[in-house]
Length: 361
Image (cartoon, rainbow, N blue to C red; front, side):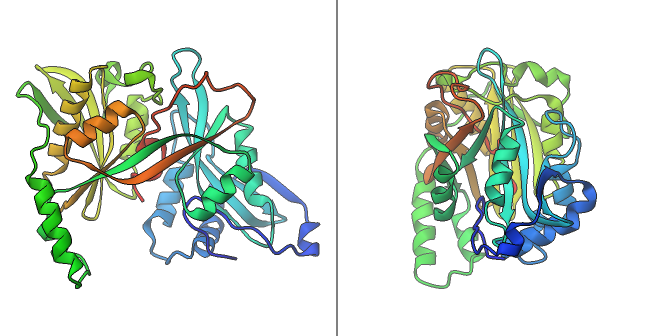
């Protein structure tokens, strides 16, 4: 085995006897979880207690009932009775304004280096079940591999952050150099700058589950600027709230007493991620208000020191910047279509954290 980085796989070192073995691609079953976990821990070089590879998390990712997929979402390549490559899909439906496209992100992608080509086989095998597969960012290895297996970079987005308790963040860090207090002082200055705040007509209420009354404010069609979102339903959001790898929170947004949208937050350690904020509006000002309200709710937990988010749409990016967030990472988005000309023209997608694994990593 070799160590691989998130979202990538290294392959090489052909052994003639191994190359002649029959390789079989197909869905995994729950009984495969221990073998899949061993492969992931070895390939990614992760410690045994790494939470995202715990059996209950792998079970939720791949086998917990999902409203957009029937059966296993985990696929493997087997060499006889041995699992030598793996990938788990996160299904989505892209709302194009016409017929939706069946898409997915592939996570936990790993392959044994003694079986070259099996990582690509995972990607291509899953693609045959869909219209399009997406990839977001990744390491230098990932960015090198993706074009080699047919992915094209189609648009870019950004990761955002806002430090809300700089001194606590510094005290809880392991940074004993002069950079620690300097960074805290910088973040204090940034925090002193006024950020956009929503009007008094906006409010937010936490919910333990989403019901059908929230369905009308979920994505129904392309959003601001024509960006295409992915379908959301109460059932899908409830599946995501059950993620065992993060502390998940669901919220409803109200404007003037009427339901206007929703938010999903995920907390991992000191970080709270605005995993998704959505409102039934095309107005840039409304989106800025919605992000400001969600950020206020995210900041309430005293242990939270930093808020993070991601956006591809210029409207959403501007809303985050107005709420005091700053760009921290560039997030290139790649896609590979099963059939040419599947994608509608040059339209862009808003692929949220909930369509990825970032909200709990």
